[in-house]
Amino acid sequence: MSELIAQGWADTREAATVTGYTAAYVRQLIRRGRIEARKVGRDWLVNLADLLKYKRAMADLGDDKHNPYRDDLQAEGRGRGKG
Image (cartoon, rainbow, N blue to C red; front, side, top):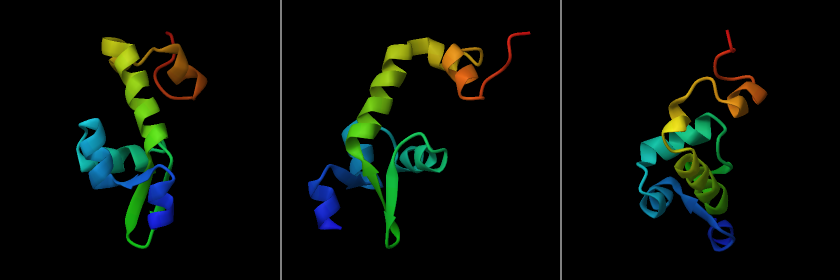
């Protein structure tokens, strides 16, 4: 496990500290497949670069991240269709 940590991976608690998210939210992102993660034993390790990329993308979207009609959601088969 320490080998993965040296390669840019962190457990959910450390990932939460780095991003300001809660550990529960980091686990939710893992479950939804939004960030890359691996289960090692009973712990989840998160790819920090992927998590920080996600955080930047959400910051760039600003308030539009709550828009269910965004084109990127449509491309992924999520969100709401345009009427």
